[in-house]
Amino acid sequence: MKTAKKLKKAITKKTKWVILNSPSNPTGAGYTKKEITDLAKVLIKNKKVHILSDDIYEHIKYDNFNFYTIAQNSKLKDRTLTMNGVSKSYAMTGWRIGYAAGPKNIIKAIGKIQSQSTSNPSSISQAAAVEALNGSQGFIQKRSKAFKDRRDFVVKSLNNIKGITCLTPNGAFYVFPSCKGLLNKKTKLKTDTAFVQKLLEKSNVAVVQGSAFGLDGYFRISYATSMQNLKKAMERIKFFCESLS
Image (cartoon, rainbow, N blue to C red; front, top):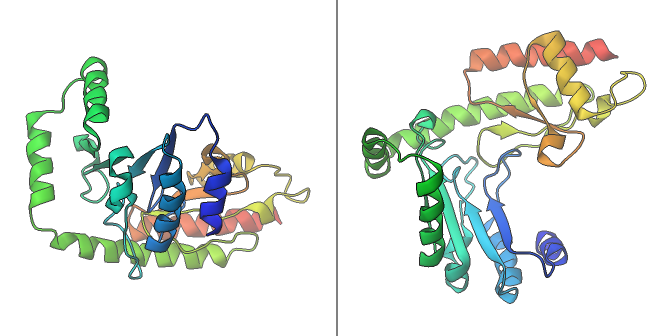
């Protein structure tokens, strides 16, 4: 309910769109069905506001988290644009295939802009995407299990570092730990940007500062890599953080 109240407070006469991304980048957090339902109640009353639902991580979820999208609410169907693609769930980043579903007038407008700003996706990429979506989906569960193991390792490793705290995400393949405990006079680091820059310089570990996503004092790590690489990264981050004290 707190989330719904925050949304209600944030909407003004100038608000045209609300963007939902669940599970999300950069935190990996996901909205429950109850939370989506509460958000929908607010949006139903604000008839001039459209909703963009980014469902790109719908299949990458853990711990029995049930994916639910606001597009399932029939009262908002005529105002909801759903976006998805094969880059994340199907590991087809380089194929550059995304798709959207929504009201005809919005899709038509998207088509006009797309036709004048980018070239069309290749026929090979389109055929591969169709096969990914219509073919066997059995590998997704196996892949999610591998991601979960990496997530659990990274979260545990980060929470064992003094000055770092990290929540456990519901999905996607990111963690969003806080480095606020290391931003002080003693470490001489004042911002999350300073933290990630120094980490890169000293440890050759690349992460993204939270301020790039609108939240200072945090940083994003992607665990869409091998466990071997993650072990090296966690060791380097731990060594770096300890060297600051």
